[in-house]
Length: 113
Length: 117
Image 1 (spheres, rainbow over the protein chains, first blue to last red):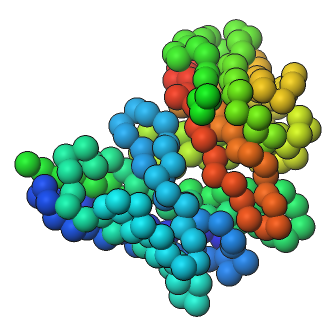
Image 2: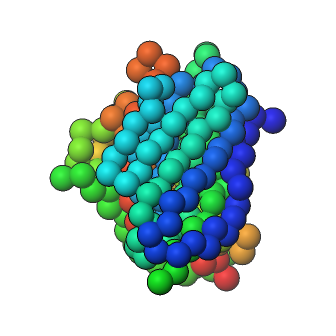
Image 3: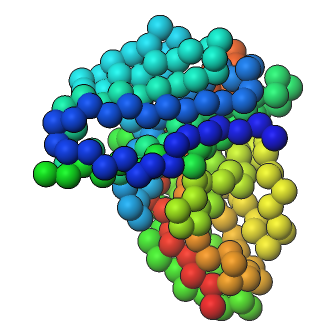
């Protein structure tokens, strides 16, 4: 079965800490990778797309390692407002059809004062 | 306008009722999606519409019936649901399904929290 695997956590960190989430995916043909965050009882919100060269947006850095089929998200200087579940999302293109996005089970982050 | 809206926010229905969930986006997106999310689980894809045509049905029971009246609207008609169908139903849209194998980001609506009694 094609899957996206994440450490479920929870990660409990103090404010100001740096925290890293990892995600592995099984389909070597995947081309699109995203990190979403989801707050309790809310919809997933796109945090960032993940590009081959890696990308950074403020305190957030995403990396992609195609050889190892591995994606990471680094959060620097954690804020209380970063507390959420972080979902790793990968397309499962079978090469012949529309394909779709597969969500990992999410990693829960709790940032404490 | 970068918003996907969904109505109603909450819905309680009996197993013999017929109801509909509605989703709307005005971003010019050509792909729209229905997901089901149970508590503490990731969203599970149900249906994909691309250019107003159903392109993916993830083996969803026929008691769920999607409809795409136009490129901005997506409905999910519900009939004879079971209590285990209680969940958060999320609508999403994206610019297109995929271009050259690269998928566009999906933007989610706030969801409809459905309870089936």
